Image 1: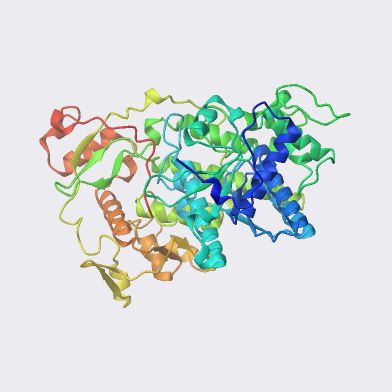
Image 2: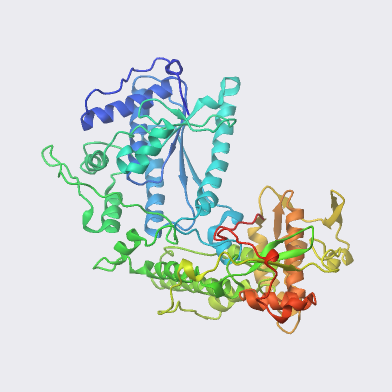
Length: 608
């Protein structure tokens, strides 16, 4: 870790480490002065905010610093405010964040402050619900790596940070360097012992920014102006705003209400009365994704649902979906046991616990769409907007593409379910009673490699190349000597919104009839169909990955494995029989040289 040298802070107001614990008012003044020092030194400030209690205070302090500098005649540069929307945020918190963004924009305009708001969201390939239902990955559980956070938050935020950096670089020209940007965050030592140790290891300070970049990476400076604030200090600040003693972009009344409702009776209302605050330990409730399984139970959601007035009862279906997914996560029959890669040397494939199985993914899709349909019905009856939306038509078609690529379902099964639920009134209820499987129920050490590749596997039309496309004179392109159908390419895997709706309105019924249950068509035909119509664009350079996955999907379809993907014994028997291996006499009698323990496959991820 590196600290910015004090020489970088030209004309900065000196702020020294306190000898004794400063008062609340002194902490506020010091935090504002530090932010002003950054701006005076020519730094461009980015405020990262979730609109939770801590980041809200940081944002309010930053705006105060800008106002004071403006009053002093200093030309204040644009403040970039960065917010993350994972698309599966707690709906109450999500609605609150949108309201706070509107309030921030209105306040900045009224005060004449240059503020630009950035809300970063996952793209299609980063959408966590698509990934789960599409059979691309599994939920992040306690003790596993948090790939959900990387996919839904870190990647979108990194992408947005690059956009912000590009704008600032254009503004500063030759004066720009990676040291020009400092991101303000709301971490505090008082939050927890773990947080305090982590901040100490990074060298974080409430006074001087710290470079969190790893060796060899470009500088990434952060500063938490409230690093030394206690939880009481934070709620005191919110209370003073609520009581009109501090003016900022929000009155924080709704923020206080959200914390009170999600924290039960432990939330402290800090409303200043004659200069005194209620002296109790405040609650530090956390709010996140309604579907999060990284915690054993979602306390904030449970507290909201437990409200006596039942004002949050409309979120119960989301909680039920989350709990059902948690219960089935370690269910062996809910897993696909066929690997997603083939040994290039001997053409074998592993049988081991993998992503969710086709039937379980279909089940999850039906529940999610039913929840959406019921919410839309409520909204129409009450002449208002839906309070949440899990999957739109575009997201459902993305799931269809994943299912087609992995040979999970017949072509356009997901859109057919969408049509049945939203147009024909079909509904699927989450079971009220079910078995909750434990980690010990899933044998993640079980692994065997079996013959998979045959003479047809490498055929020229078994991957990202379709005979139908070439018969219709669609061109092919060569990538490193391999020929693929010439498809649309963009910077990210994408579906064109207008094309999706046109396909649904004018092509879906014909496609379902053409690829209906009366045919034994390869699921991959859905991929070629959509590529041919220009509905989907793959990520630049993604030809080989799509080709590889389509070959595996076509092979498992040809071998008749789809209906037994969740049954490792049946898969083993089938593949041994296909290869005429004498070991098919006894599925347990494998040579020990073919068996090997695997690490937990609970965190799989495949690129588009």
